[in-house]
Each structure stands twice: as C-alpha cells, then as structure tokens.
Amino acid sequence: MSLIQSKNICLYCTHFKNTPEYLESVYKGLTSLSSAYGSVRKDDGICEKNDEYLSAYDWCDFFEEAPRPAAVEGLHISERE
Image (cartoon, rainbow, N blue to C red; front, side, top):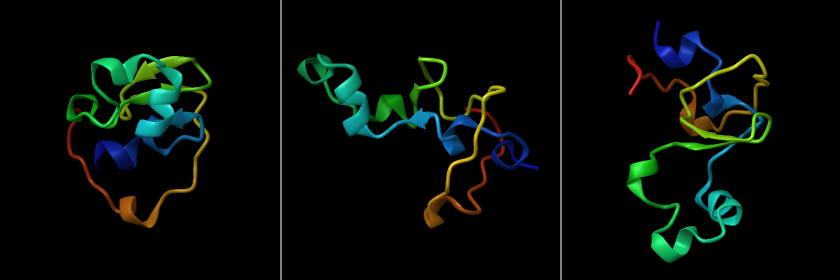
C-alpha cells in the first residue's frame, strides 16, 4: 500500500493550505526574495490547526478529510520524499 493510501496525510486535510497565493499572503515578505511558486517548496504548506509550515506528506491526529480534486484521485507515491 502506498504512503498516500495508508495515511491521512496533510495534503488531503481541510486544515492544510498550500496554494502559492495563500503562502504569499501569510508570509508577507516572501515575494521580495522569491515567490511561493518555487519548486523547492514542492507541496509544502501551512497547517491552520497546528499553525505550522510542513510537508504535504506529514500527518497528525487532527486530520479532517477535505474533498479531493479529481486530478489527485488514484495518485500513488511509494515512499516518503
């Protein structure tokens, strides 16, 4: 079973926000150095419940499933990156 199918990861949680627009609104000075569209952040984002910046592939006890876009249904990742 893949990691994404076996865990309730942040990527699929209602508390997790990782759009570039959202990250740039939270980190006001970010665009002066770069932007939230950079590839180095990958799928990282903000957990609004824990108030943390973290990987989309983390998980915690506060997971609440968010509606998944059709594009990610069936997505498989075999190991943690």
